[in-house]
Length: 172
Image (cartoon, rainbow, N blue to C red; front, side, top):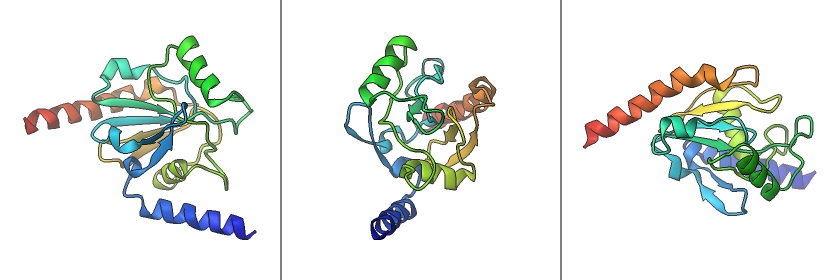
């Protein structure tokens, strides 16, 4: 019980000290620790599986990112290892976006990034393909479940990316 309490306290402190989404670090599918800070200044769509979206090519990697976090909590649909998931997503779906290490997105073992996303949006994933939209400053804009197709988000993402491009243009 004390291990759970210490773990919960550490998780709480990590989330409390997080300035925004981009202040977190995550392990990618190849075992490397990656600072999400590298995505600051772009719009990010965070998805709890790897094969959801091909928008990176549409909007440009300088302005938009899909960040995939595989999860095996719902229906045991992601049973492979991180490397197997990465290989499958890239080979079968042609995924070219970052794929991170498999995580839990809900419950006591939820990854801190997803705890932050859930607390910030007020919405908790209850199945695969949950999408969290994060603005260039790291604020969570909104979240949608699997019943909302990514195509429905296109206009909102496009408007946010356009704002990033115009801001950068003004800064030149």
